[in-house]
Image (tube, rainbow, N blue to C red):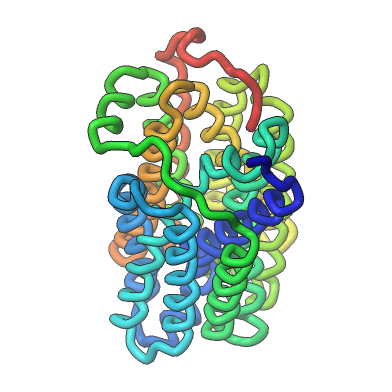
Length: 391
């Protein structure tokens, strides 16, 4: 049976909206740590568990959900997962205790890990073959856009109308995505079923996959160790409360630019792009730690930081797919697990450092982890990964 290009692209857009809602849900507390902590009477370090918990759960859920639902219609699985996100965010908006919020964040972690892993290869089954590459790029664009715009947009909404309404808005967005998928997505019977044995095999037999996983751990852990606390860092440096959401929006715009710049470079300069990401992130964190700055200098630093982090998703995903072209599902599952595990570890390490040392200490820890990518790349041979072009 031939596929309808229009319905297929509508399904792609529905999945993209779902991924945007998922990733925005996971990262939303980053820009709202201070008001959430005040509203629920917990410290900023403890509030950071709202990032740690879903990250840890998503790291486990990525392979587990993929394997456990291997014989179930993919449309049904994706719809259930995105519906869970909508309900969990609405529960967070209404919660009167931090324990209820953490339970909701646990459910979001399951959804993030499972949905992202399954959605990564869904384009092949939704659109004609000659549209697959473009549709895949659009779907992964949901991850990238949420990563660089979800937090600042959520922060702006939270500052204007309160953090509870920010969570409610993302919950409604998830339910809208659910409705769209139910209406436009066709039935998707499972094809090849991935087993748990595929995961260690692809990790063991592909050196470039191991390198990519190591890079993901260092960069994402370093980034979220510091970025989770960017709001209190800016406040401690004297940046006006009303300017923080504007600065984070600037970070998001720079991130989108970084995504497109990386997309133009990685076809021929994948390794150099990875090194550039490491250098930009380290420089930005160090500059924020050592300089006395007002809003203008903070804008410059966050632009550099945003350019570096915005380039991460498309660059690292391309590395992983190039590293194991015959086992992309298993390799992508490992990547999704490490990405989310690193978000959780970064928020956890940052929370411990903030409570035990100082808020500014997270910048040094984050920059130190990010710069370690350079020796990791330096000890690899150029032939380890053969770029075949951006997604």
